[in-house]
Length: 224
Image (cartoon, rainbow, N blue to C red; front, side, top):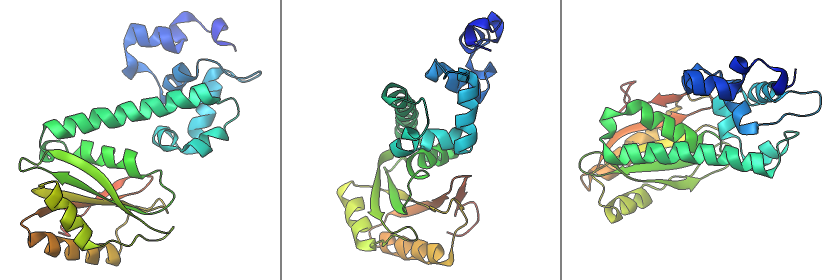
């Protein structure tokens, strides 16, 4: 069924205007961005196929340019719109985290790091540098590694913390395998960085491991 043949109250745009964005399913929201489908494939069907292909909304928004290029019917304009939506989400979270203590928004911290790191094909080690009120100064991706690991140098983290006058940090890295379970090496690295940063009176508040399906917190598991 073409969108023009769909009852007005079932069309995503009209439904959003009448009931608000929360009333729309993921496929309907994506269909609003796509606007048009393909011959023999409605825009809603195309949106659902994309969600299925990337494992849901989070996977789709984290898909890289090369992955999106492989989707039939997703031209440069539509890919640009998808990238813009993701960037708006990132910037919104950055603004919120820079204006309030991270303790007040642990879920937003996890979502921000998932948006930043989950799509990387290689392991990336990042640090959120926070001020004395635990507000975000900057997130920096400091080290990149192979498909399996990243080499992390504590002296570089200490140096950057001093340059940014950080009072505390949140450590984060992704697992390209998609599984967010911390390893023994992750635990050892956390303690090493915690000891190095303590020498300059910078606290490690947490270490978050980012996977495709979720984010694991060392602090929540009592591993700090």
